[in-house]
Length: 339
Ligand SMILES: NC(=O)c1ccc[n+]([C@@H]2O[C@H](COP(=O)([O-])OP(=O)(O)OC[C@H]3O[C@@H](n4cnc5c(N)ncnc54)[C@H](O)[C@@H]3O)[C@@H](O)[C@H]2O)c1
Image 1 (cartoon, protein in one colour):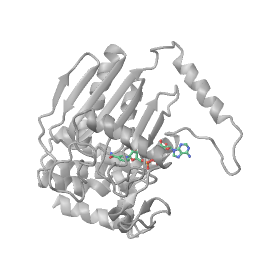
Image 2 (image 1 turned 135 degrees about the vertical axis):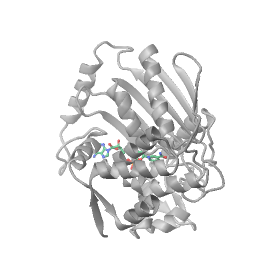
Image 3 (image 1 turned 120 degrees about the vertical axis):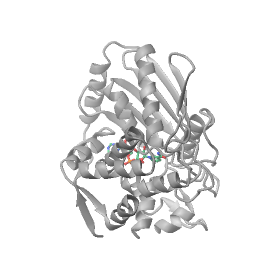
């Protein structure tokens, strides 16, 4: 596959300019460009540039609102509801996490529901904001049907990521941020676009047969992690981010790539709280906790027992020093969108 190198800041500017061309204001364009660049830098290619054309297509078709009138409704000092007015998900989530941080700083805990939103990328990206303010956070979002509930042979749940983050008293935050599917859908889409295979045992084709063909997997169903347990987690996320918030749920979130029959109306839930609610010495306790795990004897071939988030942090640091490599397909997308 031919790849082209681009300087990070030039690419960031180009993406922001594209969003401005599609009607987003300067601030919203910059928030969205930063989120896409971050996804590339942590290596989450299925949530970065590979989605730029999709966002712009949905703006053109009036399914993402480039000029949303986002309303924040105060329910209590701790609790807020945000009606994102079909804004691009990056902006809705940025407002959501900032409100949750503000509420937690005032009262100890912040609970913010977001409705009428769209795909926001990586949950961990928003978790970082809360952790920087010394807060623990839990973040949920639902997604379009891609995973079959346990016992069903039809997709209904999204890959519904579960995200938990905490400060660690070190510069590397603990961020456990995982899809509940065996593989995230973005990776299958990237494989499909580049004619690559996907791993075994992560998806079935539309006839219920295991497949490693990415295009067939997109027409079939993805499998949840750990059978009925993963299916249960997916359902929990659908309830928390869809049923509870007023967003779409139970398979009604539209696929952003394939379904242009209406807006996604995705829901998100942001929970943030202070680390010192029950103990005064959280920092030393979390330090001790992580140290104990990392000191355990290791399986052959494992150099280091890592905590969630460590690998992404390393990748981000390493990639931030380099140029971003884009495929010919992405290069073409950028050229079409710029002109
Ligand atoms: N917005 C959406 O609709 C949506 C849907 C699905 C996924 N996503 C995002 O996609 C991203 C990728 O999800 P994923 O499921 O591919 O994640 P992943 O499989 O890459 O990682 C899952 C978690 O495991 C941790 N981890 C990985 N290797 C580890 C190791 N060796 N030791 C310890 N911990 C380790 C990671 O730090 C991460 O917290 C997430 O940021 C998620 O929020 C978004």
